[in-house]
Length: 237
Length: 112
Image (tube, rainbow over all chains, first blue to last red):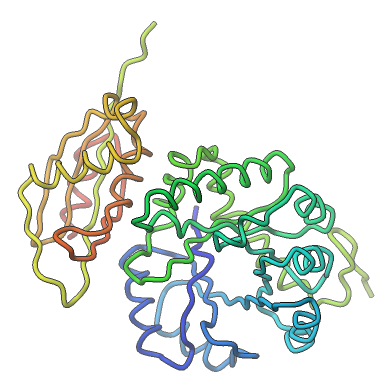
């Protein structure tokens, strides 16, 4: 089974940095990678995507993460990212934004990567996400922290949130989202960490790194297909 | 009836930053680092089940082989991944392959 590293932030103007990242990912035997622009850009040029794909054997995918401060901000941003083939995710500690994102069909993923965003995770939001078939993202950034108190708190929060998500049968993904290049780890190793340190069943952890990410990519791909109304409902000629 | 404990061999690769100082540790020093991580993250309850043995450690070819009990395989993979730095140099220890047969692992290691 091939696993995904679902979030690596890169600067699309700095080709050398991307090359370095991809080289390290190859050494780590990562097979699938989802890249996210570090700076706010509106579009990833298809030619850039082709050039990047030529650099590596890793399958590359792309995502945008929006984080408006207010709901009005987010709605303005959403207009700019309309009809994009990439995954659109929202990461905000503002609960109004989270609730809006959970119901908006243009948004694929609710991200709870940051600790202060993870603190705002609630059962109500989870219920909304399940109803609207949204994916939820958690990240393993705290494993690389040297602050033991923060690490313990973050693990506890992650453990509780993921348990809630598994019990509610929501779809979730887990990414590394590491800031430093040398914090990167092979997704199979991250699955082991999820299983041993966070107590996630091995099968669920594997799904979060593989099957669910594939489903998310499929969802993002089908978002702009006007013939598809929802899962299993398609207009045919 | 007590189930027989099986052994698992884990082949791992060592990756350092290109401009980092050459790290060369003895087997004992490396094992100490592993035990330190096991103690910090998993504690005594887990440490007594591991059956850790370092079979090979090659700093030139940058790989190593450890042996552990099959029930603690996931813990050992986590432990290797949780090592962040050695002698203040950033390091990644990434598991390549786990097997119940040492010969398979040795064949793979031969490709390094």
